Picture (cartoon, rainbow over the protein chains, first blue to last red):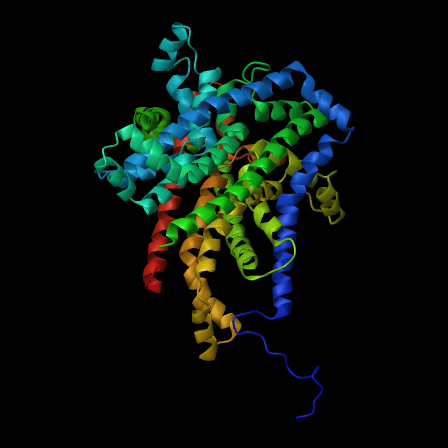
Length: 290
Length: 257
């Protein structure tokens, strides 16, 4: 028996591995599932946009309504993002550097927009600021409508993107503790100086990461904005809203061209995210070194 | 803090106040109509199915991504986040284009007499899409942390691989997987953008609850919309509570984490 050819001898594998056949099978399922559900739709967006050639796609993005939608989306994200970033920093700062009652409750509240449907979020805003509510009626009478106008879209966007920055910052700031800030304070630095020279450099990657995710969601938000925007072409139609309108009018190339712009934005976001994760991992590792 | 209350708390308070104003009886009267009831039950039923699918597929995906090495692995890893990054309206029209009867996958399914888009199956696919990353992303770090010693110990004690996976690995993954499941569920229930294009939106059949809210708002029936909104909040809350309880129970049973 000792002279069996080597090919017939059982090959040993580590006890912590599955048999190769199982491995291939599982990998196959994973690849096929992601391919069918995630990668195929992405490819479809670009394929449909370019169905009539690149010039048709470009032309559909050049008209006045499309341009105004793109401009509005950038404007809304441009307002909502800095506000949410500022809030995220303030909230993370308060939660991690101070002790107070109701901290856990506050963290839950920050996460609340994640568990509320965007449509319900929009509904809440309509009930609060709509023309026949108390506040909304008064504001409309003063000439500042919120719903079916820019402020409503900004508020809806802020609601759904509210948690992103704070959620990224809180774990990082907990990990870093307060020692740095306390040292700076004992050395005579003022509050703002501590923030800009100690806190901000420490959290910059996490902050950038949060802002990136916040921006991607802000530009792509559909449900909440659809409820409050009123969908006035050229005025309150953001890019996702315009996609819906074009699609419902069977203007497939135009709808998918605009979708392709947003899909490109998503791809850039993912790329930056991967790069950040990589940089961030370096920094995290550096911090952990004794 | 002021901003939190202005942007998040105040609007939700407005909805709850509205609910308090017309009382549980009135909410029930609206919810108890055939169309609303159908929409709510459809939303929650399909979301549960989608989240269950994602629970199984998500754990599998996380395992493959962490433990196996194959070409294109990092690309696949990046693709997991795509449903987070891709705007829902974009995902919605893309999925419809693929799964509609004249689309690439839709025409294939039609050969077998199955229609995907504009049926409940289509809604399910859209909901699976939006919930896909949650379980994978919560389970992945846990698998990375697992020490091989535990598996080796199990193997030296005579357990075969399947037994080790079932009795050693799976219990460690459970809490994280359940968290991902809850997140995916919450997301699917409220999902609007990626569903409405593929759903067909036929009342009683393929009309989801968030869509019904939008329809009521477009009819300026704010009370009706608010009642459905409150019902959704209450049911979601109850489900998340139930999942939390299951999680506490599973942690206690395992005795660590």
